[in-house]
Amino acid sequence: MAGTREVRQQESRPVQKGEESSVDGAELVSQSGRVAAAAQRVKGAPAISPADVLTLQRAVGNRAVRQSLARGARRMGDAAGLERGAPGPGGEGQIALETHSTTLRSAIQREDGEGTETGAAAELGEATPDVEQQALQEFLGRGMMPSEVGEDVIGAGGRGGFNAKFDPDQRELIATVNIGINFHHGLQIDPTSGVVTADPSGFGAGDATRLASMQTNAANIMNDFPDRADRADEVNTNWRWAEDEKDDWMERYRTAVMDVWNAQHYFQSTRWDELQANVRLVLNVHAGDQEGDHTSGRIIKSPPGTMGAYVARGSETNAQDQSLFMSGSGTGPSATNFLRYSLQFENNSAELETAVGTVHSRDAGPAYLTKFIADFEAADPSAGAPIQIIGRASSTGSREHNQRLSERRSANVEAYLRNNGLNGSIDRTTSVAEGAEGATEDESWRRVEIIVGTGEAQNTAAHEFGHMIGLGDEYSSPAAGFAPGAGTPVAVGDPAAHNALAQAMGGGVTGAVAENTDSIMSVGNTVRPQHYATFHKALEQVTGEDWEYGGASRGVELPAVGGPEPETAVA
Image 1: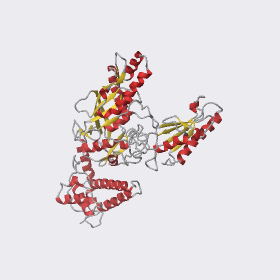
Image 2: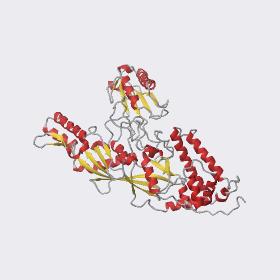
Image 3: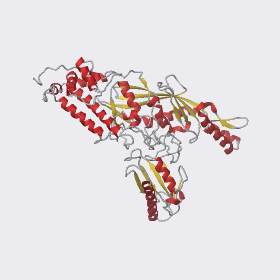
């Protein structure tokens, strides 16, 4: 009679590294030939038959099957939505999810097709939680995963490399990056003649353009410092390393990277609701190259704004052959801030036609704002990086007059942006007027400031570190913008190198695309969910379990650029 048969329940176990985890039917395949056949049909199937679910239920229990199939349905729903451009509620992805959930619920309630609710669900439902709890305890009892020494992980498209291991006691992924720092002088000065030239020791075969730029710096110093003693002082102070500077620099580098990247987000187990994993970053920064280094750095002594930076990847299968090239000034804010813009107006005027840019270009007002529109096109027409427009005035004249004048200035800028192609959400721009607050009579106060996102200048070291752990760039240099062709050749909305890894994170992360925002892999410093994509890959690789994005580890409120609004922090 239905509901009265004796059912043999067997323990489930964590999926081991290298096994399939989709219904992850492969974890059941060893139970029996009948279970194996059912698992094979369920794995990747567009529909799940009640008979197959019942077979699996009898092997491992309702709760385990319900969880694994629900995960598969959710992921299939996410994938369907992404393919159709409608991953959110109400889209085809959600419809697919609901269809699979309905199939699952009906299957769990059936007994060999008899349609009764007193079958396998009643027999197995109560005992399964103990099995899952036992499986969780077995997982946590495995110790450091995969081992105490960890395992090297390579990021998107063969980029980057770091060591990863999971500490079940602390519930954290430990991501270790070993970085050897080689210090090189930027310039040299002949002690006899006083002639300044570029020091080629830190420049490789692919750095010809940068070496030529350094030689231009040498020529400028020859012109700017006619006195030989002053010239030598300039070169030795700003372009050549002193031994006592090196340890301090390595500590500044480590702090700059850790402040931006460490413990920003956490992951949630898709199997056990009570299991989360934070990310702890470990940076081993030392002078000279050592065995086991993931990145070898060439750090050139030069002032801010005199040299760019890059990370060169090596083999796609070697996590320990990355190369960092960077100025010694790269541990601080970049000399160029791509998140702040300014228009200066004529005295007692709010007319854009006579205003002129003072940051990034000296274009007249309309041309300046047109370039801004090109650079900050929103990848998602319903979103976009937030833009704050602040009107100001000098202290000349009455307070009331200056307040009204600053209001007209900011309103005119906002209207131009909205009426000339700036896409994104309707509330993307906010306009405020400060009047002459804090101002002097200097003409520089007759301005409108445009601030994107946080407005913070990017820290070069922190941005390049993203490449060192396997991420691609997310910024774009459109032809109509301020710096056409200066950076990545991709268009706004094109997928970033780590897009596929970001989409695989789940938890609402939609991917990673090119867009000029305050994100760390774009032109700012904010580490958003998609920037933990390689850590997510590492966590699944070393534990053999499925995880998804959980939220912000510090409770930081981040706008949804490439990912969901993060949830509350995990301690």
